[in-house]
Image 1 (tube, helix red, strand yellow):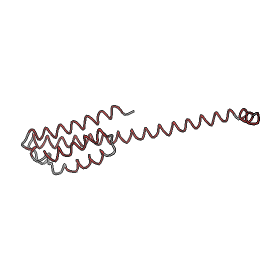
Image 2 (cartoon, helix red, strand yellow; image 1 turned 135 degrees about the horizontal axis):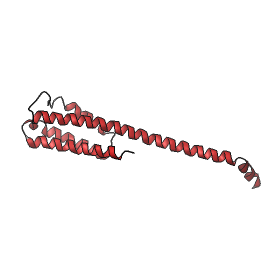
Image 3 (cartoon, helix red, strand yellow; image 1 turned 120 degrees about the vertical axis):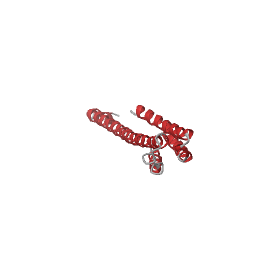
Image 4 (tube, helix red, strand yellow; image 1 turned 90 degrees about the horizontal axis):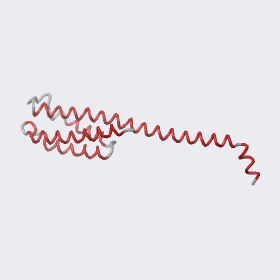
Amino acid sequence: MTRIRQPIQVHLVAIIGLLAALSALSYTAWRQEQTEGNRTQRVTAFSMLQTVEARQSVVDFDHYDNDLIAGNPIEDRGKGLYLRDLGIIMPSSIQVKTRFLQPAWAQNWQPMHQDEVAAQRITLAIEGLRGEIRALLVNLQ
């Protein structure tokens, strides 16, 4: 027993230093991973917000201004695909809202030019997604 105890006592400072270094390294690695995850979600969230705002502009120009150039829903199709692709890496609440926006758009983009209800359905789906994205941004740590 004393043969084990003596080397431990001699090297106690080194052992404590090693444990402290391993703890610090583990915490740093964990914190870096958290930070990178937050950074990825933040950049994706801002990109999604810009895209849904552009989609809302299409709805507004098409329905309220009768401007089929600025409000061209055919050119907007890529925005929906982009949102769907970005939604994959987001939390499930945003994925659900992104998936909800797709059928809302698909079912209402043609009649939205003349139909107030169709334009409102798309707007409500956009607002739901925007709300989830804003909630995510507020809760990132």
